[in-house]
Image: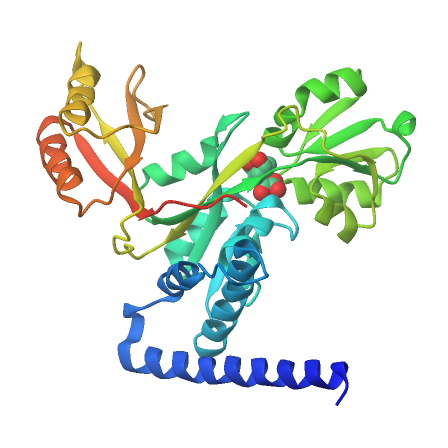
Length: 348
Ligand SMILES: O=C(O)C(=O)C[C@]1(C(=O)O)C=C[C@@H](O)C=C1
């Protein structure tokens, strides 16, 4: 037997095992219904990747397992994830990294449409950017989260490296297209290297790459994957102003994930319009020893000078310190809504 036959035999065994696994998933879903969904299965799969003896890195093992887990679920019970498209947007790349490519990822045309698809039940999950390390919060996402129709069920932190992509050489570029957040993350580089070139806002970075592919003189700020898909040249790679540029994505769904021991909670609250109201709420977090990792204020539509607040802190809403804090907060604020308690996300 030569090495290539050995390898082919191993591959057959791997496929047999995956098929065996798929049948087991189908049986479990038939018996237990919705109680153990894809999201929980992905969390379980991550937890078993801890093999010191393995030659593959733990991130490679995780990525292989994620694809197998999602392909098995997809075959047993097809589910869809809505994302801001077209394909090869950063939201698409985040969806692939989180769910694996066995899952059906469905492009829609705006962040609002991702929420709508999950609310209507057309898609079981959605993935949306929530915060960028250079540019801050993503307003469209926070506005829709405040409606409270869907939950955050997970998160993923994606390293973002932008590229200037075009059919034209840099001295022939007359317009640079991209989503406002992406243009903003590169504003220093664009001011230094493309002075006087018109900046045009698009619905997504991948939509910008599509536009650049059809019109000479247009360049896009987008992912390398989008450049390859649309046959564009890389005029300049890594043009983000901050080398550690990271966007945090929220995974939307209708369920409430169980506690895992390494969770965080995203919370929305509204306080009375009176002196010290916000300080009183901060005192509740202090007394319950909950360390805030994010705080955002957001204007109340149609109520000048009034705001709602979104905060995040470690812990699950069913953990006793968090549950106690929620009871007190409920008594002292006008509105409290847990937007999600979910496992702390990994960075890819
Ligand atoms: O336009 C895209 O490719 C997106 O997925 C959206 C988005 C965003 O709005 O933050 C996501 C990540 C990057 O920060 C830039 C753009």
